[in-house]
Image (cartoon, rainbow, N blue to C red; front, side):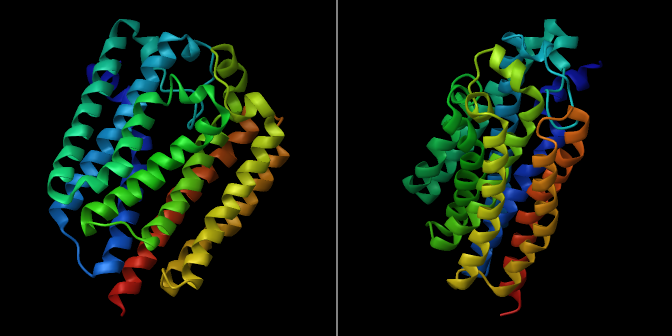
Amino acid sequence: MNTASILLGPMRVPFLLLTPVCVLLGAAVAFHAEGSLRVDWLIAALAGGLFAHISVNALNEYDDFKTGLDNNTRPTPFSGGSKTLPANPERASWAAITGLSALALTVLVGAYFVSVRGAGLLLVGVPGVLAVVLYTRWLTRDPILCLLAPGIGFGSCMVMGVYFVLTGTFGAAALFASLAPFFLVSNLLLINQFPDIEPDADVGRRHLMIVHGRRTGVVIYGVFLAGTYLSIVIAWMAGFFPPLALAALFTAPLAAHTALGVARHQDSATEELVPYMGKNVIITLATPALLAAGLFAGRLLL
């Protein structure tokens, strides 16, 4: 690998698309509430979100290499790590430096917004930073925390954090908007754990399916998908979302198809699960993006 590949590999750059989608959703619900956006603050919030995402990815790569997990997983396009560090063990410290540097930049961006927007941001900022720092080494040892932490980070913390930055407050609409990525991102990590259950257990992880089995994972996956769409409908019925926000429901048929496929292939070879892992990525990205588009359009058409 060349130097650029070694630097970018632990960042898992293709996966960073999730951050702009979640930031966009936070911006959309803020725009729907106020009818305007401060673009410079939105760009700074996006940078902070990307730094946080890069940090958790790089620290995860470093820890997975140090525990030996990377040597025992079979990589798929969606799981198993980038394999950058096993191929370049002498560069392992680069991943740690990348993760810690990105974390420091995240904290700096957050500190700036606390100074200009108020200490209320700490309500989502502190849990977000803790999720980055604690996820791989500690939270993966608890089935509930491991399940919920990704959704809290990208949903509750990121979406509501962007909303607070842009509006100076929290609101019910932002809370409802954060539920879609909360459920979907937790599901994203859940389904990506299927191929690595045995290697994860070997290094001491105790996520949901290690403790309670694959069938429980399938049930939770379906419940969280249902929660995604139900939360959007409830928010619309309560008057927090405009009718156009229901465009997010367009992914529901694909979600139902994917849930059935995961249930059917829960005990199958990894190759049979990979297509459904790919469809799950589409659901995870497209649903919040459609919700954001509906919120923007709903305000513009008032």
